[in-house]
Length: 519
Image 1 (cartoon, rainbow, N blue to C red):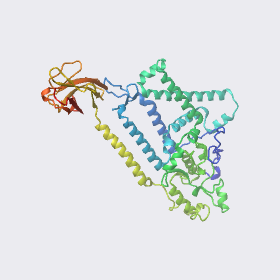
Image 2: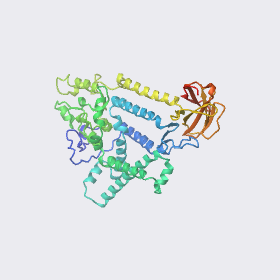
Image 3: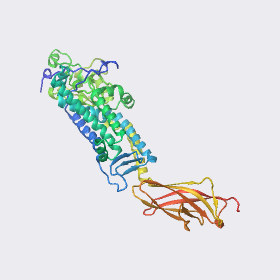
Image 4: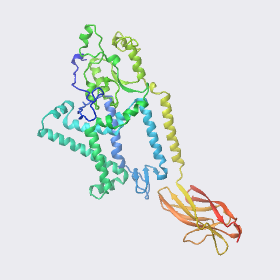
C-alpha cells in the first residue's frame, strides 16, 4: 500500500470544464486523455467491439428468401421500395413499423437516461465509439498521454511527420470504411463493392462515401469533444429526464474533501483530511477534458473512466473504492447531510467513518433495487406495449391485398343480349417473394360472371390470376349480370381473392350499377 505522498500527481488541466470553458470563437485547446483501465474501460471495449462489428459486418450477412428476393439479411432496397430485415419484409405502406421502432428507441432512451444517466452518450453513441477507435489508433502510433503531449509540443521533424502522417492515414482509412459500410445497406454488398472498386458504381454512392468519410474524420479525429459540447442537443435535453433517483457519475466530496497530498502531516496537525489526494488521475483520463470534482456538467458523457482512474488510486492507498462513483442525488444529499451535520458546518470526513477508518454504516450506498421505481416501470411498460403492439401487427398483417376501382364513365353498359356489364380496375398485391395463383371470386351477385380484358366471358364466378412475387398486378375486369336477374340501381357484392395454394384471403366490397328502370 502506497503512502498518499507517493501517489503520482498528474499535471492535467480540465481545459473543457465549465469554469474555464472558452468562448465559441476561441481556438480549441487539445485534450490528451490518458489510457484508463478497469471495469468500465473493459465494458467500453466490449460495447465498442459489438457496435462496430454490427455496423461493419451486418451488410455481409446472408438470408435465403428464395429465388425471387435478395439474399442480403438487412437491406434497404430503395429501387423496389422494400426494407428487408432477416425474415421481415416491409413495404412502403407499412412504414408504421419503422416509425414504431423509432418510438421504441425514443422511449428506451428515456428509460435508460432516467435510470442510469447518459449511458447512451458514454457507451453507444457513434461519436463516442468512433472517438474511442480513433484514440486507439493515436495511442498505438504516438504513445500514451505524456508521449503525445511531448510530441505535440516538439518542433517538426521527420519522426513527427511520419507519426502524424501515419495517424491521419489510418484515420482516413477508418473514415472511408465507415462511409463504405453505410452504402452497403442500400444495395447487394458484394456486387456494390465490386462496382465501387472498378469505378462502375452510381455517383451517389461515391458522394455518400465522401460525405461520411469527411464527417467521420472531422468529428471523430479533429473535433471530438466539441461535437458533444457545442453541436449535440442531448446534453441539454437530458436534464429534463433525470430525477433525484437517477444514477450519474458523481464525485463524493462528502468523503473526498478537504483534499490533501500530505494526509499524514495534516492528520498529525489535527486537520480534517478527505480521501481525495488531488492526483488529477480523473482529469487525465477524461476524454471530454473536464474535472468531475467540479460537479455535474453538461460536458460529462458519463463514460465512467474517471471512476476507474480513481478506484485504482484508492486501491493503492488502501481506501475504499467509490470516491467517484455512480450515485443518485438522494444518496449524495443524505451523505452530505451526514458529513456536514445537516449543513451546520463544513465537511467533516470523520462523521462518515467508523473508528477503524472504514465508511460508516450510516452512509447511503447504491443497490440495484433503487433503480426499480414507478418511473422505471412506467417507461418499461410503455416501451413493452409499443413492442407488443408492433409484434401483433407484424404477425397478423396481410400478405395479400385487394383493391377495386369502379369505372366512372360509363358506369354500366347494356349488352346485345340485354345483360348489364360493369367495368372494374382490380389491383392484386402479392407481398411475399414467391409467385402465386390468386383466384378472384364474386360473392353476392346473382348470376354474375366476369372476365379480364383480352379473355372470353366466363360462365362461372371465379377468375384465376397469376401474380409475380413481390409485385402489384393490375387488371381490367368486366362483370356482367343477366337482365332477368338484375336489380335496378346499385347492388352491393364482394370481390374475394384467395391464394390457390393457401388459406390467405382478401376481400373488397363493391357495387354493381344497373339502370334505374328497365328499357
